Length: 325
Ligand code: GDP
Ligand code: CA
Image (cartoon, rainbow, N blue to C red; front, side, top):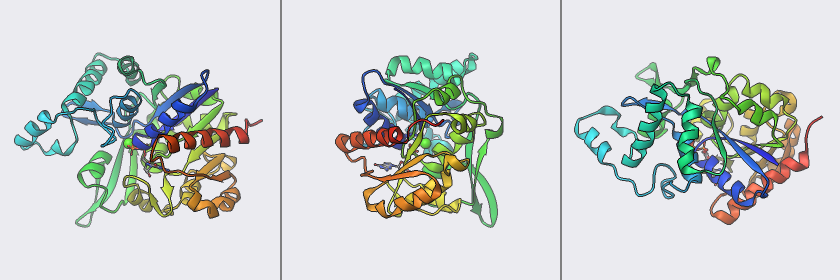
């Protein structure tokens, strides 16, 4: 079976770990990662979601934090702070910097982000084919109000420095109209047996991937069932701070709200099926009304056993929907 996953960072990686532990021996997993979180800082090209997937699956992640390297030190960050460098809010660990140096060096030599990602994965051996959604530069910016004026700031600044505590007026995915799918991305979707959306952030992880022209069409036309997992349980984001982003876009903070935001493939959206938590089981009939299959299963990835079961449930829902046409 060919399994293709569209992923952000932390939520996506956890889910994919479960998928890799439970997949059949002949199954292949391709991960298309969001690159709209990418940022240039200090002349470095930083790809937070690609790195989170790579480090998590390659067993180099700091499990407690959920991002960055194990056994990390922060000397460079401290030194930057001592120089009064403003961007020192970004979590830049010493080991992590080496990854950004390699990526930046290769890009400057004229390689593509896909090529660099493949090179970095030779070290980390994540057990999946890891593809950036696009080799073109895309950056999510968040519109916030500053003293009565709309100001656009990079998503990382909003997320890390402002801790997502400021109301979102607007989400602008800069460069998305000109971005082309990276090599292999369209084929990974159209040639898949199942396409899965892990419980990644709907606005800043799944949103940008699905907004790349070519990726959206591939999702529209693939015969594979497309099934997603809700990142919202009850009335809030499970981990992290997705609430403000959803509210800012006028999306109802519920599993069904996010499903409606993605939309049913039957009516031009992304989804054939959507998994909600058992505590949200009452929302399943509403999903069917939206035009997608719904199922209620435990969605908290608290330990390996529950994460594995969630991966199995997701694949099972996809297989029960079956191929189109
Ligand atoms: P990021 O790029 O690092 O922010 O990570 P993702 O976009 O992949 O995932 C973030 C989302 O994962 C958040 O919106 C959370 O609501 C969701 N999430 C995290 N842990 C869990 C979990 O255990 N279960 C579910 N259902 N969602 C989760
Ligand atoms: Ca991210």
